[in-house]
Amino acid sequence: MYNFTYHRASGLRQATNLLGKLDEAKLLAGGQTLLPTMKQRLAAPANLVDLNKVEGLSGIELQGRALVIGAMTRHAEVASSPVVQQAIPALAHLAGLIGDPAVRHMGTLGGSVANNDPNADYPAACLALAATIITTKRKLIADEFFTGLFETALMPDEIVVKVSFPLPKKAAYEKFRNPASRYALVGVFVAKRPSEIRVAVTGAGTSGVFRVPAFEEALKKRFSPKALDGLGVPADGMSSDIHGGAEYRAHLVGVMAKRAVAAAME
Amino acid sequence: MPRVSLTVNGKAVTADVESRTLLVQFLRENLRLTGTHVGCDTSQCGCCVVHVDGRAVKSCTILVQQAEGADVKTIESLAVGDTLHPMQEAFRQNHGLQCGFCTPGMIMTAVDLVARKGHDLDDKTIREELEGNLCRCTGYHNIVKSIAAGAKAMAATTTAQAAE
Image 1 (cartoon, chains in turn brown, red):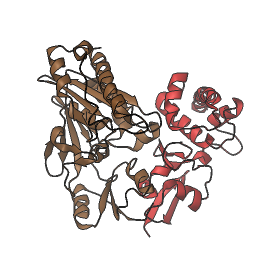
Image 2 (cartoon, chains in turn green, brown):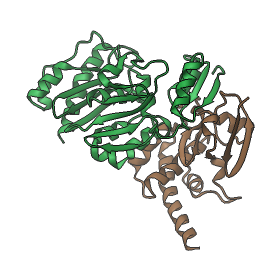
Image 3 (cartoon, chains in turn purple, red):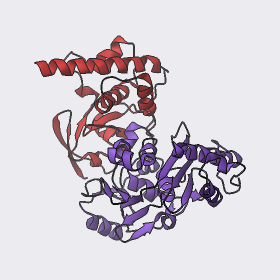
Image 4 (cartoon, chains in turn cyan, red):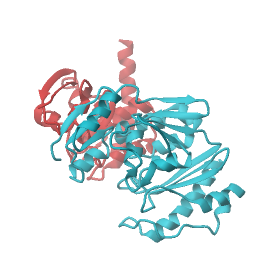
């Protein structure tokens, strides 16, 4: 990896100032995506601002009807948290499917949502659960936060602080995993919320995570895998690579959505 | 060059390092602790697993700067003199290695697994937990056996120590 200048932030204000002041600065959270990317020289930031010593960025708390998780909370903490397992078991399940145990000890919720990898798991949970991403500047609903392939609404000096997940009535995440990368080839998160049903898909779309309105409407009439019979998503707009073509991914979206609905009903 | 201070295998160390120095480079090149291996350097293989503040991490995917102030334990910390750690001994007894390149990472992952999931581990749990450790000799069968036996042996050691 090319060399860079490392900066250890001690607080959010300092981190924000560094991001504003330094050229080509990037935040370092768990580093499980950023460091491999830098090693491959796909990214070469001149400055890294490390958030690991910033206090108050990690933690899991139930606040009324929402589960609030700090941005620096590691995947392993979310997966093993009795609070998460009780409040939104699908979210604990999802966190436990990311990478491998050592990666989960480092990787963070905030890093995952800020990177918005089209194959990452957390964006699907945020979008399906209608999460709110709370930053140093504002609150953004997931639908506004994720704007495209590796793109979010974050400004250059804006930092994700926590994510608030409203509690669903039922939810489940089904992931068809690429066995080599452990990313989602296709992952579908289904959430039955008090007011609506949401279906969010990761891994498949050329523009990153997306919702499937046709599935949502059908499930609103009848929350059962059968409700999705005969429905599908067009291959147009699905990504295609050596791991799976667009047609295959489109097919998987339907299959994984049915499995997720069945799992949510259990 | 920035300075970093951390504890490695119980010893305090301070050094000037490049910003980009990875923990595994620091361990191997600065401290000459070459038991931690670099297999793939892409966070796939797990040969470089060490414990940072009691959690197994891939030392090829963490800057040494991120371990500032941390307590790092490597494979070299396990044996006491000539006496192997129960997990190491279990790998020896069960032929849990062939070429041995992945073994330090396997053992550090296994010790972390026991700390998190206890001493009575079924094969399914062990195999799931090993998904971040690759063995190119395809020796998983005996590795799984070794870890199950090592986990039990660690319980016996803990009990013996508590009784002393």
